[in-house]
Length: 267
Image (tube, rainbow, N blue to C red):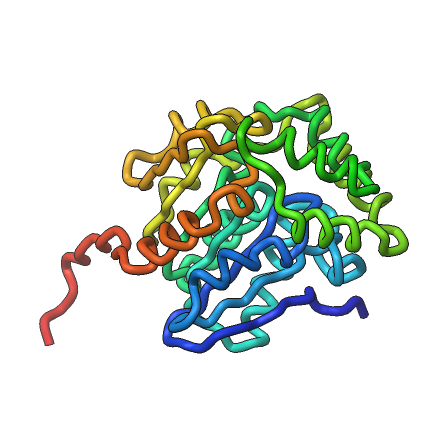
């Protein structure tokens, strides 16, 4: 039996924030975001299946499988109400989790999420998947960031360490090829997105070179949208303080009111 996904927990509080990183990354990239959310919140950051310490866990193969695996782990931890945050591929995983188990998700914050349109810079993603040494990892992060943003050293170091694990680079290269078949990505149908009742915040960098910001134009009208000027795709690294504040703000919102049920017998 394969192991459960790896996660690191910190903080205490009545609200639990679950963080899902993007493709080719690991939970260490949330360091500054998590620090800004503390104290007062419980933060749980995962290595997605196929990444880092979850390299050989259940759920490898794509966003749907990863969503099922993370939901099963949350159930095993008896976490029945969480505030879910996902970046890029982690945003696609988070969205699929909310669709599969909406009662568990108190709020949904999506940072340049995958799956919201077919367009993707496939060549850049595949280059990032194969990046190994510090120079190439840093260059890929810079290419995915806004033009004036510099990749943090601690993120570069963490990603290089992750990619030294036996089998990690091959796993990333294979995943990237599957995700960008035909130079397109899979799309979550907009009709499904419109069924989500919890507060949904979508955050996108105005200078995103990986997933075009125009994908926000087809969002359900009730979704909240926040554009970050001068930011690219790597929002967690480029604007950690702002991301943390947006997450905190979204946890205070109320979801769509349920329609009243008519015809029930009076008691």
